[in-house]
Structures are given as structure tokens and as C-alpha cells.
Picture (cartoon, rainbow, N blue to C red):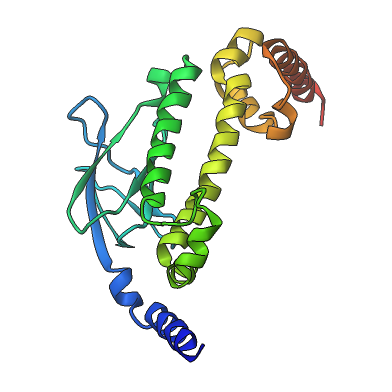
Length: 237
């Protein structure tokens, strides 16, 4: 029993003391391109999802940001699809962004591209954990209690859980995109220009609304909402 408590406290001290070793701080550097081209993207925003610190790419598409090995970076640029990247080392890396208007009319392709990226990042995080996100036999926890305790407080588990929250929210947005997207709105309304942009933002449905929708439900919602929106434009102040 005494030996167990000794090992337990040693494991806890191991978790607390060497954080600077387990989570090495680096300056992550990279360059952002438009996928399939040699065009470098300036003024893209690169955000560390752990610290919420953000930086912009320069005229040559280069950026550098403070990070730790295992952190997730979110790369965003207007008219391009968001991209998630995991910091695996202190080496420079390339980010390829997909132009949104190239895939905007085909919602299925857009969803597959984005979901593929999200799933790849999620799997990369889970590779670094032994218990989290895996259906382990309960005997594993009894057989390796110290390992289970160590992982419970590990930075890798925290990063995996944090990204899982991102992942679940993004999947909900992708489901909404199937029923509320530019192609469907153009097909079912006469909105254009600024009116179309405002409508897409202000009348986007919630995830709970679209759970049981089909294409006809989506079209009905869009037409009804467009009429309401046009009525507000015609209402005198």
C-alpha cells in the first residue's frame, strides 16, 4: 500500500514539474498558398486555438506565431475555406487554402473537404492519447492506473478535448450548410448583392431547426424568410 502511494505521488510530481519538457514552446513559421497554385495569400489570419493569439500573413504569405508542439492553428481568409493545422515540430510548413467560390455551388464537395480536414486533425490529436477517445476495456484502467492518471492531467488530453469541441460545432455548421447555402438561396429567392449577404448571415437557421429537414423543408424556410426580410426593407422607419 505504501509503495502504491509512493508511485502515485511520484506520478503527480512528474506531471507538475516537467511541463516545459512535455509541451515545448516554439515559434511556428509557415507560408499560406492557394491550393493548386503558386499564389501566396496575404492578410490571412492564423490563430492558435489554445491561446486565441492571432497573427496575419505578410505580402509573401509568411507568418510566425508562438505555439507549443501539439497546438492547433486555425487559418482563415475571406473567400477561402478555413483550414486547421497541428504544430508537429519547429520546422516551417505550408498551408494550402481552398478558394470558397470554387466549391460553393457544390455543397457536398465543400463538406467533404472540410470534414476530411477536421477528421485528420482530430485523429492526429487522438494518436497522442492512449485512453481518451478510445473504447478501452475497463481492465486497462486497472492494469495501468498510473498511466490513466497521468493522461487525465496531460496537455495532450486537454488539446484533444478542446479540439473535439471545435469538431462537434463545425459538424453542426456543415449540416446546416446542406440546407442553407448560397446555391439554394439563389435558386429560391431573387436576392442579390448586399441584400443576399445580409440575408445569408441574419437568417441562417440553428442546428436544432434543421435536424428533421429535407430539401423541401429547406426551400420553404428560405422562401418564407426571404419574404419576411423583404418586408422589413419595405417597412418605413
